[in-house]
Amino acid sequence: MATVTLVPPGGKDRRGRGRPHPKGRLVDPHALGEVRALLGERPRDAHFLVEHLHLLQDRFGRLSSAHLAALAEEMKLAQAEVFEVATFYAHFDVQREGEAPPPALTLRVCDSVSCMLEGAEALREELVRGLDPAAVRVVRAPCMGACDRAPAAMLGQRLLAPVSLETARAAVAARAVEPLVPPAQNLEAYRAEGGYGRLRVLRAAADREAAIERILAELERAGLRGLGGAGFPTARKWRIVRSYPGPRELCVNADEGEPGTFKDGWHLARHPHRFLEGMLIAGGVVEAERMWIYLRDEYPHIRLLLERAIGELEAAGLVEPGRIVLRRGAGAYICGEESALIESLEGKRGLPRHRPPYVAERGLFGRPTLVNNVETLAWVPTILEKGADWFASQGRRGAKGLRSFSVSGRVREPGVKIAPAGITLRELVHEFCGGMASGHELAAYLPGGASGGILPARLADLPLDFGTLERHGCFVGSHAVVVLSQKDDLRAVARNLMAFFADESCGQCTPCRVGTEKALALMERPRWDGALLAELSQAMRDASICGLGQAAPNPLDSLFRHFPELFAAQELPRPEEA
Image 1: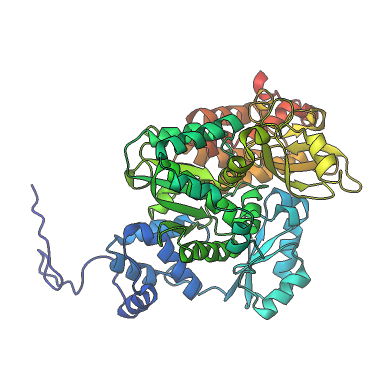
Image 2: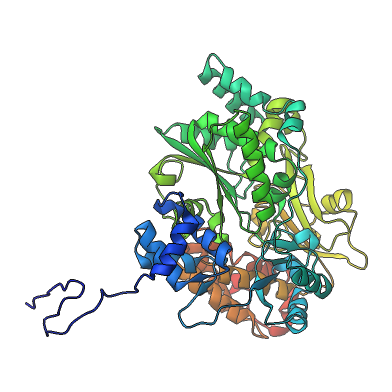
């Protein structure tokens, strides 16, 4: 057996050769000094890795190899761990050794479905030609949560929506890269209308268990469900988390990255304290040690708004400093999946976990964890104030409650619409969106964002609620509705959605990583091979780890199922016949 001799720095190997330094990338003293100065007194715990990468990106405009190596040294992490996290997230611009630094400004142009309908691809090419490449680089980017103002782009942290060559030139000339914070209801105004009264009742209750049970019973009668996409009964989820011994954590999923979805941003931008009260009530019910808000990085204006609102709460003594933790996402759609979100909060790549155990039992830092999205929590104070019967009675056709529909596409008045659960697409368009846009006739619609499938106009009278669309191969999901007309190419829409999934796949499992890429390649051909696409679709559904790969084929399968006329000339078998 060969003997391995470990050589200390500066020592000699077994052949007598000297080695001036240890193997691996050396840490540059100057870069280490810059990292230490930037971090200051901030903690060096591993779960701060994504946050510290944001600090470096914000300060230097990129992540150099020298800074990444220095950050690994300072945080006592392996360099491979830091590099793999930095290269996983789309918003981190890792500069490889030997690469020239990019221009000081980056303009990210959204190419998701709602922006595609408004000519985003041609606009991006126009921007590439019309802007100085030495001053600004123009790159593609996924959904930015501005689907109702398409086409959208971001210059630094400044949202430009709708964007044009003229507005982009003006922003570049002014170096307008800082976010604009919208006006929102402050703590004083919210408390003047009774805000945080439900929280005070919970905290002051002599019999805390009885008070908690009253809240859970009210939410059950109201029929409140998780509105991030899955629709799981809210009170039942809270009870499950409470059933596991503490300490417990609460995570808010504010990383709505589904193309066509922007309702959580709407709630946060207008009524941050209503959401925060709902979060504090949920945290009180499950007795969470801390409450973590994971906010998508495309919402820098909302991050500033939330920092201000949380500061108001702490100054007023309504929450202990540090109990609410606001964290930034980094451009990974997969982190909308709850276990991937938790991995990211722990400073890792956002890879979905295998289940069981579920995060309710073993989530953040191995603790029982409640995960809810923004809209779910925002309804809690209203339900407790107006009563379960009031909320439940707002629905139509037997559905309970109100929903925040994100509506974009070919309607006169896109935006977030607070409408009854169980409303139909036809009613939603005509009662809340001013009808179809001029010159457009309803041809199809996405009822649940990119993953919810595509339905034809003849099914526009179906109730939009959980459990009503599944028999048609679709689902309502996060209630992101994209309306399509006779002027839209449905095959191009499906290709756009598959390209999104191929780009956003975390790569952990082969069915999703390879399946989405292969499906996209097949869909880019003039003739679609229905049998092969059906086989790929089934493999992704059966074997993908999480919902991304399982739902990615929905738009594709919808076309074969509901729009056979698109393929009649090809004389190809439909998937169910293959």
